Image (cartoon, rainbow, N blue to C red; front, top):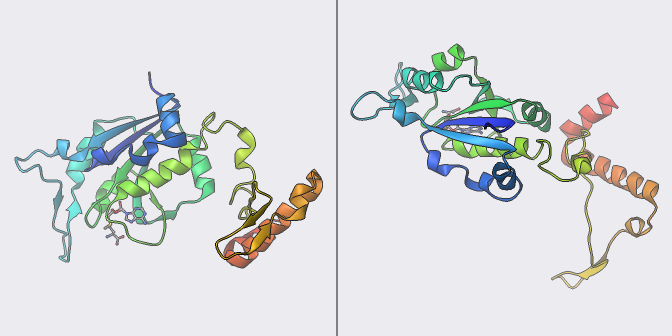
Length: 236
Ligand code: SAM
């Protein structure tokens, strides 16, 4: 039986999966059948004796490019793909909003690049949705796909026990989250300074706690992420 959320991962390194997705929340959700993961070894779709998956770029230059015919055979053999994603630094930067939208899908197919990337014609032919996990270059799409899936899977129904848990997390309301504190109420750090938990959090006064947390969220967002703060103010 397929899980309500199925992912097909196209990679040259299927042994990297499930990796950390097999642990903790996502791992338990995998065991419970909330989501399922199928890895596809792209090399299995090579037709020559050397199992070639890449070739030199037309126009010259450094590096190798993953072959469109090989990728096409792999994708063709795994229809329906559902939403088809290619992990690439050129893609749309991953956001919490995108993670929510993808968590509403039933099937995802994710292509992990290696070398210089993938022949553009394959991406055009399959209308790939290109997603980046940040402005830096990794050596392959596998860790990027894992990060994308981690962000999605924790949003699937029943993965996190308390449905309200997400509501106040960073980015959910356009702000970064407020600071957290737990016992002991007074704690002395390695610098010898005793630090107390803010009084308001011990007051038991829910409205005051909520107001304090909101103020903190605003202050932290304003200081650390002026880009988010500007957006938040515009939508307020
Ligand atoms: N030549 C590419 C460029 O300059 O945009 C970088 C290729 S990178 C060495 C190899 C693969 O890693 C990419 O095809 C992509 O699948 C993955 N990758 C690297 N950085 C990434 C990022 N920030 N987000 C998503 N995927 C990334």
